[in-house]
Amino acid sequence: MFLGGSVLVEGDGRAKPAVVLGGVVGDGYFANLFLSGQRFTIVSRTSQLLSVGKRWPVAFPFSGRFSFAGGLSVLREETRIGATATSAALSETLYNGALALAVQFRVLQMARASLDLDWSNHIFPAGLATVYLATGRKQFVSLTAGVALP
Image (cartoon, rainbow, N blue to C red; front, side, top):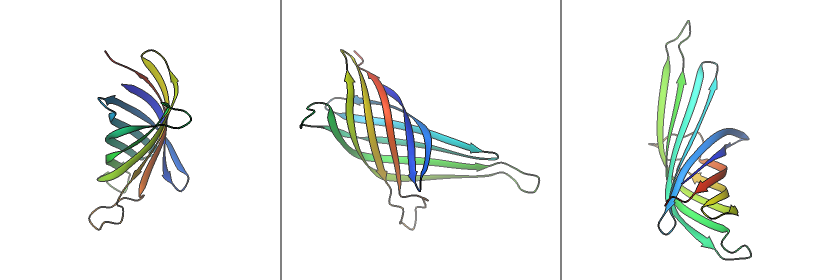
């Protein structure tokens, strides 16, 4: 199980803080939950992204320290605009699915604990007529600390 801090990059130079919680079981099967949110006066926007897939170790100079991951992601984004003197409150919730690709570097390995640097990219089918999403990708750079549960 691991917990860490992330930066969510949505393109066009837009970055915001995020938190990642996740775990790896069995032969490299993983689940990650990324949480992020922002508030601008009366407008708030929250994102939750659940990613599941499999990690494969990469055997080259840093044997055992690099891994590649692939899987699927589901995104939920909510935008709320508070009420003003001239308009009522508005809310919009959007869902979308994505292909997830990631690279992980194990910075430090101790007996049952680890420190990892991750880059994950979630690519959405933004051009579909039935699905609206302002950006076609979500990218996270994360530093996570984990502990192996007995």
